[in-house]
Amino acid sequence: MEYLLAKFRKKDPIKEVTFEDLQAVLLRTQPPAKKKNISTCDYNEICPNIYVGDWNTAKNLNLLLSLGITHVVNAAQGIGFGMVDTNEQFYRPFNIQYMGLALCDDPNVAINEYFDSVSNFIDDALSQKGKVLVHCIMGISRSATITIAYLMIKKGLRAKEAVEKVKKARDIRPNNGFLKQLAQLDNDRIHINNI
Image (cartoon, rainbow, N blue to C red; front, side, top):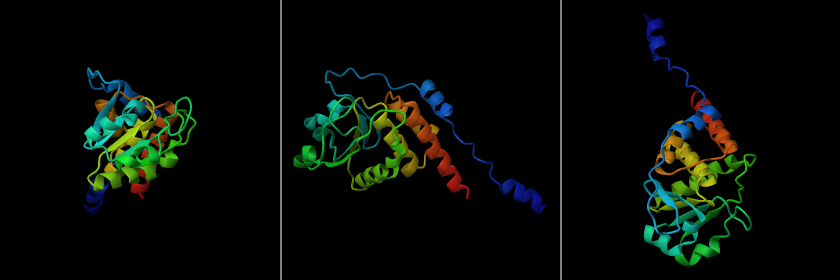
């Protein structure tokens, strides 16, 4: 009898997620209908008080103030093609806290090195009743990846759930290298939780 009870108490092993699993979620999940917006800014609220957007949104201080944005994460900090040239000084007069990551949208970039620090920054902002904009150039790869990682690390979502949640709120397309890093984050987390 004890053997049967022990058998029922055991959890089924949690299946590891693959890069292909995340690609499939991206392909089957429908993004929201495009807003008819006269503005050149492109942003969406992913979950309460977390927005993902493009560089125009990040540079439109009037819009940020009207949305109540208190914190900005620039996942493309720098000068040149594919980068956004904002920094702490750009936002300081408006009392907006800033975190910049000099990341290229390249599958070989180790974006996972920033998952914990950015997740902590976003979580701290929300704990202070703040609102966060996470952006890159178009708001579809680097910023989406950072937001997905946050949902996994701080909200406990599995990678597929987090990708689906963000895709339902915004049309995203993280590059293949970033998807692989999200899959690895997911698999690392299930192994830690099963120890």
